[in-house]
Length: 380
Image (cartoon, helix red, strand yellow):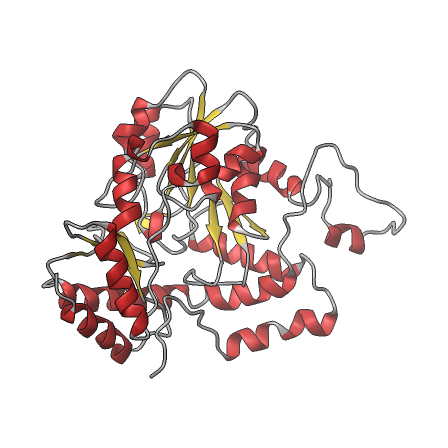
């Protein structure tokens, strides 16, 4: 019996065709295919600027650095998210300030965020966890104009809320194209923004701080001239190999999300009777990207029962994962800031009860039935 994976990229003939041009021309670094990917991504997400990067982590760092986040600044982040959200703040020499989440959405709590605002608060990073958008408009209204609202939209390509696309309302956003995401370039990320100054600075910073791109220099009239470097930058560029794949994948994003939504509906219709399993919420006025289908295992024995369920599924050829981790429990952060597990109770609960079950565009109805039937047989 084949193993059902927690996630699987979906490639076809389009990607094989797309990647041939950079291979044949020999232009493998950032070039025309990255530009096309950026332009198409910006159009879909209703943003003026989109800059492709080597990963979502580098996009997070780049957007903060380009906005001038630095030593002495505090940046509020949710405790329940992938570690790179907080790491990107430390990369800038700033201080991450953790807040708890809303267990219904797994997203950052606005109420808890407002409690942590100080005179040093420069920004908030709201995470669209698992593909469900944060209400960025509401956060901006409550926080006021002096605090920047960034968006970690790693899981949210193609998602929307109240008619606004992920990344379109925040000061800047970062997306991921890791293989577990709905569309992938292997590794890769995208920074989006409506702000021309941030975009201009970020574009230089991702290319070592150079005033012009390698493509512009290569095609310029003076081959002996090197670009000017007037700020500290990084090598955060995406390759044209990745850009060509990204363009092909992006053309399928809408159909991928529709398929995932159908799969989520099937789980909802067939797992609602499993009393010990809490299913993820769907927005009434938006599009969930369904990067992952993250449930919560509810039982008096807590994490022991959750782990036993995951082990049972694994033995039967079905992969699962915890939703993500509570950062304040990770040794680096708990040692650095002296956190206790109880400091962020909802994040602790999510850390011990979340279970992602298979959901991806290679998943068949027969695969879903295997998952459903096994979960139904597990006794509380």
